[in-house]
Image (cartoon, rainbow over all chains, first blue to last red; front, top):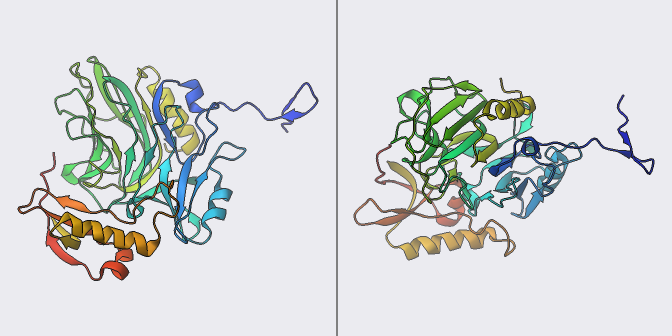
Length: 285
Length: 78
């Protein structure tokens, strides 16, 4: 049995928390619906609107550094709850939000927290749900990494955006050809690996990295998906970044998301280990 | 693309429809809330003449009435 560490004053103290971002620094934005990602982050994980009276409240983490589900269900009650904002745990205040009620992804359905593999998830309806980044961590960069725990529902097989800046820069999407996942990683003149992974209704860890003009690789569940690309040296432009749509209104994502990490630093050497950290928490593969 | 919803000739009509929904649902509840509108209108800027529309949601029926079906031109997927 673990009794914790005995402090100088004789009090039992909790073991130190080490989050993903403590081990792998350099994130440009980092969101998690389900867990705290950094020991230096002490704010809320999400802000939620409840359907009963449209009041909003921040929801944080509990003593185990995971979403405070008790606070969430107490606030929402037997009604529906919607995510209005996901807070950036990287320290860069690059939150993502949605100011229109009808376009907010759901997190509580009739009093029950939506979960995938027993971890809280926000659900996008494929009709109008989308979140807008307050700032875009990819801008002016040509070296970056992206990680997303998500599940594409099967009902929208084509043209379904998990992440989008534009169709010439950054996208993770279900494209044409029966619903394969495609990664547009910038600097490649439009080329992108086309995954053949079966993704319908399955929780997956989608990730990619680009290392300047050296290489770009995409992964599903830490297995490389498509060929290694050699990008040019161009950097990413300044247009807005969206979760769940292209430009906020088109090719809307139908499915769930639980964690989104964007590093605008070179994490190519850590890519597999970051995937491993995420998988340890979510048990995806 | 066929859309089920509410179609408006002028932007002011779309704004008025949005405000009617906000008033009905009491949005925003507090000035500093993230949620500032109940629904948002879109611009069909690839159509001539340009028009404005709101996609149907069950919650809108009580405010805006029955929706209709209409065509909106969308860019090809790249």
